[in-house]
Each structure stands twice: as C-alpha cells, then as structure tokens.
Amino acid sequence: MLGGRKNWKIRFNAGSSKKVYVNGLHYNYDKNEVVLYVDNLIYIFEKAAKPEDVFITEHVGRGRNHFQPEGYMSIQCPDIDLKLFSNLLVTFGISIVDRLKIDFRSFESFSNIADILIGRNIEIKEFCVEEAETRKVIDVVNYMPLINQMNITQRFECQQRFLRRYNYQLDTFPNKIIINWSFWFNIDQLLNNRSARIKLWESKLSNQDINLFLQEWKKAGTFPNLRYLLIDSMKIDNKSPIFGMVLPIQKKRPRIEIRFGDNDHIGIDNAVQVTKDDGTIGYLRVELGTNPILYFLVANPADTVRYRHGRSGMTW
Image (cartoon, rainbow, N blue to C red):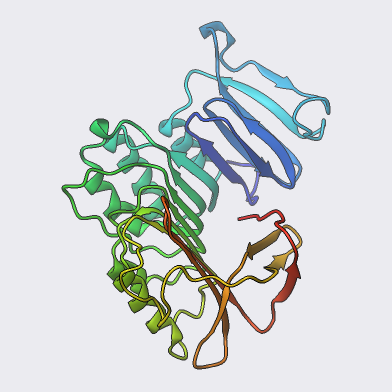
C-alpha cells in the first residue's frame, strides 16, 4: 500500500476449468484461483494443500502456461474465497476487475463483495455466474438488484438456471450478454436493452415478441449499439410471420462475416438481408425444427464485411 499507485487488475474464478487470457498470454484455470497482475508482473493466489504450505511462494519459468519467467509468482493461501478477493481489492486500490466468476450459493458472501464493488464504483469487465444446483439458490431474486448496480462493462454471462416462480429484471447493459436459461428475460427487457451482442438460450420469446423487436429495430435511430442477436426458443414456429416473412427465414447465399478486429468476428450463413429506415443493413436467419433459433447480424458502414463459401470460425 506504500508502493505508489499502479493500475493493478484482478481476476477471480470460483472453480471451473477454463482457458483465459491475461495480457495476451493464455492460462488454464483449473481450480479456485485469484490472479493479480500489473504491467509484466502476475501473481497467482492458490489454496495451500497443507497448512504448513501457507505463504510459500514459487517463481515459475517459461515452461508453464507461457507466462514470462520474470513476472509469474505462485502464492499459497489458507483459502481462496470472496474474502481474499475483497482484501486484495482494498489493499492494492484496484479500480478494474478484469473477470469475476462466482456462483449464487451464498448470498451473504456475494452481498459483501458487491457492497465494495458498488461503493467504490469498480469497473467489472466480465461478470459470470456459474451454474449451481437450483435448490441452493432460492434467494437468487435478491441478487439481481445488486448485479444491476454493478459497473459491468464488457460481458455478462449467466449459466445459472433460476427458479420460475419469481420475476427477474436485468437492467445492466454491458457490451455482451449471454444467458443460458433466459426464460425470465422477456420482451420488455429486450426492447430496453442497449448491449451490442446478445445470446438468449432456452428463451420463451415468441414470433410475436421477435417481430415486435425487429419492427422497433427497423426504425431509424433505434438500437444503435446492436450488432448480433441470437434467440433460442421453442416458441418460434411457422404459425405467424416475423418481419413480414413466413418461417423458416433463410436464403441460399455465401456466409457473411463481419470483422470487428484482428481476433473478433461474427458470421452468419444463408441469411436474408433486411434494411433499417436509415439504411443500416442486417442479416436474418430463422431456423425451425427440434431447436428453433434466430440469428441476426447487423453491419455498420465502417465494418469490414466478407463473403465466404462454407463455414469458418466465429469468435465472441
């Protein structure tokens, strides 16, 4: 705390295996760990296997996880939990949480860390809710007001399946939203959303809901941030049109791919071109079958649009 102000960043992963990137270098999260880093220095806080190992540190060479040998240190701790995460936030004066991944097993623990994040208006670039047993998150309705107060800027991902007897409202609009069980995310929330990329799996949105949204999108000046929308819903059927078209909506054509950056692109196959009143171009495809799904990609004038024959990779 006496070392002068630096732009420390932090990641906290609550125990799942996932490859992530820190400063352009990849690292495998294979257990509960907190990653603290600044410039070329990276510190990995790990739970000690034995009490006598607490505070043992280890410098790791280039052979492990592609971290630079001069900057990677492993630190053994009594436990890896939200209390440690909270202490590190305060001690290092951290203003940016690069990634926070938690579950909803303990509302008390979550509310404690939320109070700090909200009170200090700390930017959370990526916030992910891991899936836990539904019966263990009966008070999940209390989490949403706290989440809505957090400064989540880049990505909100919810893998948790909520109980159906409550109404949930998401009022935060980071750049990307991914909801695995989105039956609670209704048309009003979609119409009010200002995110750029939205994926709604297991949705309850119907043809009428989707048509209403697309008709609103068609108006000049609406949804200026929207670039990509995916809706997976069993309520999509061929009984009513969407955007004046009978389902399925598709057209044999090359794959359309929009590149937003060197490692950031989205593609859509066999899509029908649609146009906003202000001239903005969108590409729409709606599939029926056992898993009805809608894909909608929006191109801005400054985008690099490519046409490809066959599928290619897609990053998110």
